[in-house]
Amino acid sequence: MSKQILCTCLVVLTLTVPFKIRAGELEELREQVRLLTKSVDDLKKQFTEQRVEEHVPHQVESQSGHHGHDHGKESFSISPRIGSVIDTISQYSSDTGIDFIPRTVELTLMAEVDQFALGYIVLNAGTEIELDERTGFLRRHDGNYEVQVEEAAIETTSLPYGLKVKGGQFFADFTKLGKVHPHDRPFIDGPRSVDTVIGGETLARGFEVSYTPEWMNQYARLTGGFVDGIGSEIPNATVDLPDGSTHTLFRGRRDFQDMTYYARGETAMELGSVKVEFGADYATNFDAERRQIASADLLARWKPFNNRKDAFVWGAEALWQREQAVVPTLGLGAIDTDGDGVAETPVFTNTGTQFAQGAGFYTYAQYRFGKYWEPGVRYDFTRPDIFEFRDTDADGFNETFTKFSNDIHTYSAYLTAYPSESQRLRLQFSYVGINEDNFFAGGNVQGPRDQFQVWLQWTVFLGEHKH
Picture 1 (cartoon, rainbow, N blue to C red):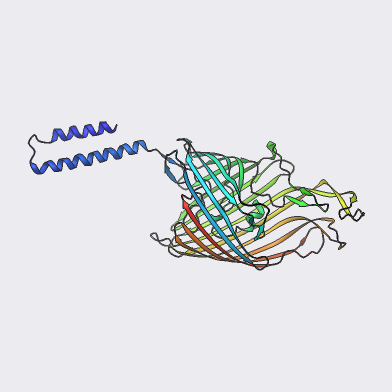
Picture 2: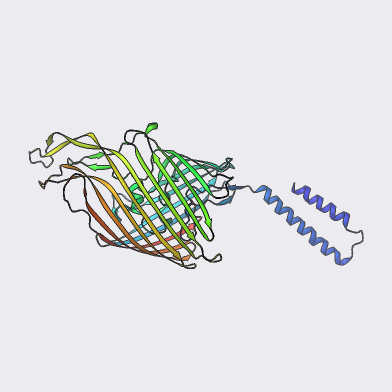
């Protein structure tokens, strides 16, 4: 097609140019031919490059305007795009002292398989120090650096009617901040309410289908998934028995009735210079120990100036979960656990069931002042049910299987600085208040103490930061 266009242009020029060309017109004619040749080359490039629209599975616009999981629109290419993130944090706690940790060392590989699908892999290197999002403590575990596959998925790019299908291991499109990588959150530590309900990020393995109606004037998306579970770690999944063994409270079978089914709906609208996003979701499975999760979220963003980065962001989300646990019950007899010849520790069997619930909400507000500064505040409340063996009669033995609740209030203030588009610094202060006074099975045992925390985060992005 390019050759045909060039030939046509040359024929037109030949027919319109007089046989006797004046000396001054020859150079002008050459310039016209050069411009026509350049136009043909541009047309050829358009025909050879195929534009594919990549799905944004977990698009959450952060305070800086950066989309942490934004695929965007890229030219079709089978060559993988590589990006990495280094996220280091340090913490001082009035309870545990000072710790330092490279929380995220992440490598992302993404490429179009063909014009119909793309694939991406996210590798993450963990350390021997972990951040327990539920308690806010940095904790050590045995072992050195571990490299693991955090996400590995295939996703369609050209289905009709606004449909997308994803399969593999990925962050399910569920809740607002649960599907966001830790270094992409607007604050350093994750909301405890999200971790209480979800159990970390919304990591899932299975299939997800989304539908974005193309006929609607405003944005809307419906998502449904069929996965083996939601969450990196189910909260309160195990309990230590008095005899030293570990009991699993929630079963992990893989029949169809044990799989997790979820649905999410979200929409966005613009009210002048304010953009408002709404979302709600629900997940369940259908076996005897089913787990139910529900949440609703709201995000409002106001940009007072079109030509500046100034922006006010307010977000909030409420979460709830309920799960039936297979709990140990007191059996017949006792065993000797301390070697003194006396059978003092009671024997437990796995025949009882109890429901465990968790609920909470968080809200935050922040304002971006120009290119470099962004202060913010956050409040988080969570109330999880916790199972534990406790000594309720003060005889020195943990003989009572107890379900109790902690009311945890977290107050945070933080300041984010952006030296450049590829570097971010954040300072955060948090006060954690814990009220452990709601016992379902009696007893009066002192729980965790209130604490004051100081956080410092330094994050750099290398290459393309896309998931």
